[in-house]
Length: 457
Image (cartoon, rainbow, N blue to C red; front, side, top):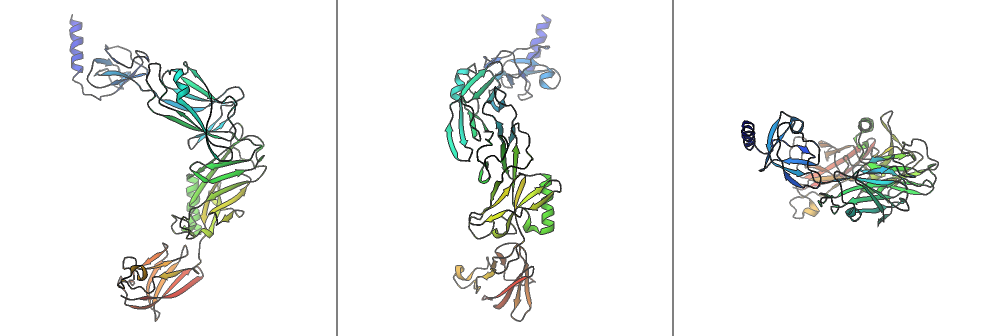
């Protein structure tokens, strides 16, 4: 009687504990019970991961330190089942296949025709709902063409492993990018559905005897064209943009320090090649591939968008990263395709590449506008405004602008930091200049250009 009185007093005290003190995972009850109330005693053993304690109004129970991370404690709550989820995994070994894969940028590379793709679940599933919940779509073929073709697959479910094995009867076609989706129509054996969609992208190994085109995911204009038999056996290639590393940072800083800020690379591409067992491929190719990296000039003004200092399109070259020396090395064989705004490099091996502009000292196209500057003239489009001032355009990537009086006195000196570059029509002591004619001069390296402008206040 004393034991029962003590136990009920202890459980009553537990109801006074605040919600949210902690959580525990237990396996008691089995997958078929969605929600159940729990009673426990000190010394009870609750372990596992199928259920979790939800702290809210409900029946009390006792949880040990193994569950709460502290001393033995009492909690009030309900025992709720952990919602199911799925993980689309890499390939597994089957007859004629290989389990060796590499995952880059969220894509699993190296799937062989005879492989199965395994989809794992955290709870036991109803096998009859999986075929309708799993879809496989081919996205790109070996030449990079969008296909968006649904694939008829075979699926085998293992209750013991809580995993589904997905394969194609005729084998996965080589050099193809696939999307596998598991929808929320998949059900557990207790009737509960998956909480969220799960997806995975995977690419099959490429046929060495066929020509292949590999795109950077999300940037299809950045690509590698690989001729047939460039590799001696089937292979995989991944193209990634926006790559970062300490070696790249060091190479960037060294390049800017030696060649100027305008020469800092503005786009970087990493190309990784792998052999038939996904070993990194470092040998030269049997035939030259073409590396194609585009750049943006959406307004066709002859300057690469979003570069500062502005880089002229005609100065863009491709560079290769020398990882040992931590330097960018200019590739003299690269060719600039201004019509298509891209640079093409024939290459017999793959590495990390970048686009960068050479220092531009051309001043031949530079000029000032509007001329005359007459902000009170009632025609802002023709005569300008005080807010816009006088602007200099088609400037070199580095250089200086000087404004003189007609008698040769220096009025203002500006460093080229933008294009167009604004002059606020003030002198060196921040005073608005007087009306009159002025001489402007743009210099860069050994190049110089001058002209006249007029201010009418």
